Length: 229
Image (tube, rainbow, N blue to C red):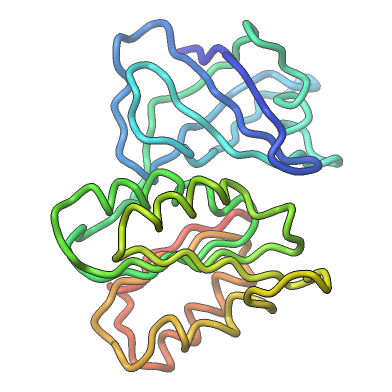
C-alpha cells in the first residue's frame, strides 16, 4: 500500500513530526507501539526501513517522529517529501506494545525513541486503573524534549502519570533532572520489582538499562525493548 504525506512540522533541528494517510483503506489497524515499514527504490536498490508509529489509531492516518541521518539513504528521502508525495509501506507490525495495561510500568526513551511512547502512554492511561506510569525521557538539550507540552498535559490530567525529562547537556537555566536516563533508574523503580519496564532508544542505552534491571532482579519477561540501531 502507499502512504501519502499530509503534513510535517519541525520538533527540533533535524527532527520532524510527519502525518501520513493511507487512501486504500478506510481504517488502518494497529496497536500503540507498533511500527510501519517503508519501501522505496533508492540509488538503484530497494531499501526497507521500519519506523515506530507516534500516534494512536485514527482512521487511515498515522504519525511518525523522525530524525534525518545525513549520511543515510532513507531519512533524507523522507525529509525531502512534500505534502501529496507517497511512499510504499507495509501493514503495521511489532511486539513493542503494552502487555498488561493495569500493571504498574516504567517507560524509558532517549531521542526519537520517544515515538512509540507518544501513543503507548495515552493508551495505557485510557484504561480504568490507578496503576502508576512513569516516563523517563533522556535528550541532550531542553529544546529537544519532543512533545513536551503533550506529555505535561497528560500528567496534569492523570495523577498516576509522571513525566521525567532529563538532559545530558543541560543549560544553566535548566532546573530539572540532568544526566543520562540510567542515573535516574533507581529513583524511578524504588524498591519495587513487580513493574514492567519498556525501553526504546539506541542500542547502547537499551543494553545498559537491561543489564542494570537484570542485576536488580528483574525477570526478562518484565523487560520489553526496541533498539533503533
